[in-house]
Image 1 (tube, rainbow, N blue to C red):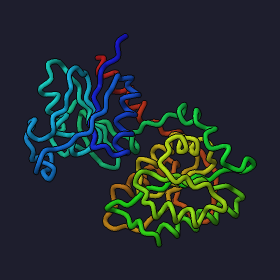
Image 2 (cartoon, rainbow, N blue to C red):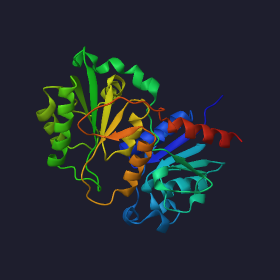
Image 3 (cartoon, helix red, strand yellow):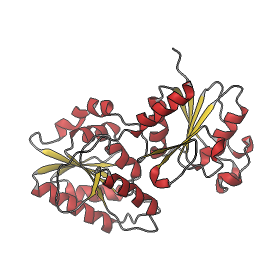
Image 4 (cartoon, rainbow, N blue to C red):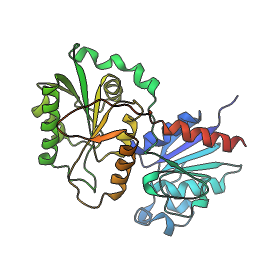
Length: 313
């Protein structure tokens, strides 16, 4: 059977790429990814005030496609316009609140903590993403020769500055010291994985504070990330990243979030953490570690199954 053809539209940020590619793979699409750029002053105008026109965005050379999966503010108008001007029936799916009339899309995927409701809205517990348990297991051995073999491992995943959180060296040093204490007193080895948003000075600070008892990965290395998720007994993610917490939740392992002081109201992100806490998936990092279990979170495949049924019907 011929696969449906999909086009993915994002602003090029890792979290967005993870979501659109994860859904495309779960839907078994033959897809291409396109980075959206808006024209001139339309960069500054919200989608609800923008015309549905080619004038809004730089032209994308696209021909035959069956589905559009978009994520992020800049991709809203291109998705609507490409569906409207296609020469056949095309389904469009937007991830996150598009901040326009929801009826412009066949499906909208939004996390429960956004409180978005509608007949075409599929709510998820956290962010959908591109990781699968099979892919994680396939990369288990990647870091093994760089780690002590007779220890359990504690993984720390670092995010980066956002408008909500004060990602200063002083604040991150508190997390690093707590992490190091837990590694030492539980006879563990630490693994530190940065994200695309992690500043270089924070990676350097991690090396200074942790290198005696932890392996600090200094570059963006997807294989190292997957291997660390597979090997770790415990996982900790800085509180700024709902996407990386959601990704870690596919492992079924204990996940801690490391709190960071806020710059501004982080109510949405706190609601996400409260939901995952109620599901017994995450706990706040403190001065002790414990084991617990929960149902692995795989919202990407759950949502893809619903979309497949609706498209086929």
